[in-house]
Length: 419
Image (cartoon, rainbow, N blue to C red; front, side):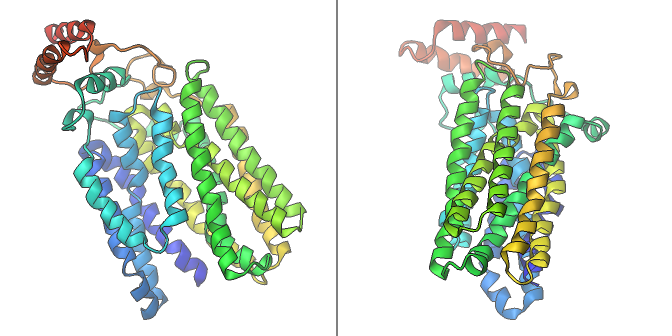
């Protein structure tokens, strides 16, 4: 029963991922994301009550929490399409997604309250696109707009056939699946493993169970920054393959060591190392759907996370089924499953990982992955004639303060004239 209660949230997540990714293409990510996460926080406040009313009620509450949380990746990706320039998107994605692991480390006790407060701040500060932001500077707005290499079309037709036949997409999905299986074995089973197999006391178990996610957040953010720095020297395809393959294989090596040794302190070190390396892998495939899918990325990640959520709820169930007597031998079998998945998925991604031509609107297959072009304000992707006139007026006002170079104004005027 414990496995089903722990997994209930992932059933809800699985159902909402794809619809959220599809809707985000049409209504944007801000409202959908804020509403979904806010409702999840509200339902989480009823978890203690559900626990007293019985397992059925508790499972239902966690399922509803999952429905709200399932909007996250598709909505975030929809916002990146409008906000993230190519040589900054890895670090932006890493900083944002690493917040979930920092949250795991520090906010378990106040999760529901924190989520509701966060939702209020989200609606107050966040805008759907740079053009709607009230305090953005003109120079920053022009920088973002001019570096977006794939203009957002007014009418999106999802190329479902190409998506389902895409080997690079399925390679990324397999990587995502393997990483999720490894992560959720630790996330849901680590306290039990530390308490009953390694014989740590309850206080030690709480601290040790949290530490891996703090280190994972640090590695995720660090390698996100490093990936952006390396784009000036290597193609993003190469960078993604290195980070994904290295992160997955290091996790597998750590799991093999855990299986082979019996010293509990050394096992804890390897567990922290293994989970931390997940941050390296996430810095690669977490943004990869935007690499290969451009403005279709919310749908790609919605479909992918729908599939990979199978790992999220199956991993705890399988762990509960295998862990009958809380022995190291049983856990060796549990750890061997993600070990195999991680190695196989890394090989598949090294073979098939690449950009998809059908997702590129410019005709240049590498325009998303490898664009590091300088500022070119003639490529403003979503700005209307009225907005260009407004930018032109603002630029004239700021020229006296030397905030915007004269050539930027000339570029905007040229673009307006072309309209």
